[in-house]
Length: 261
Image (cartoon, rainbow, N blue to C red):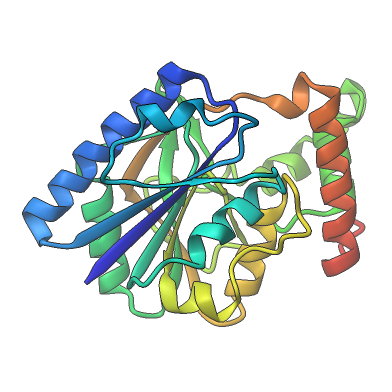
């Protein structure tokens, strides 16, 4: 049995990146010790320079991407190389617990109909982050990203339902609509069946799209036994460039899947 892991980096702060590698190394060692599962890690560097290469252990497969074509495209470069039973896509600002990988393997082996698994996520301060959400619509994301405060208040119940804040995070859930892209644990056979990510999504909504396509062939699930920390930066709230990427990907998603209201 084998697990492969892909991480796409782009100008990731060195301290965050080192924390990610340190926790990943510990989780891999625990997995190999307790379950004897082989692992292979692919680091795809979308950064304009290759300064990160010197920080990466020779045990990892380093792929310098000559042109940044987006998060999904970067992961697809790694997917071309994999030959595994399970594949984890994770962000470089994610920190794993010692038993994260063991628990993910245990859960997905116990549920053979599951093709994509989401974890229990907290911030470094311990605040819970929802690992899944409803299928996005243009109206839902207008409310979240662009609506004035009075309109958000009038639609608070809808926004909470979309974000999944009323879901009990201490219970496992199945057939969840959309898994957050910071940590996506796949059964590799289904990931290959759908040919990985849609390269047309440069940034944002590639996780919604791949969740939806995979759900046509297997179940999606969430379990609180798989725990991660996500040092998430709310880029869509502070950068007009990321607001543009967000809006362009939302429009592309809507054209592909529909969902105006």
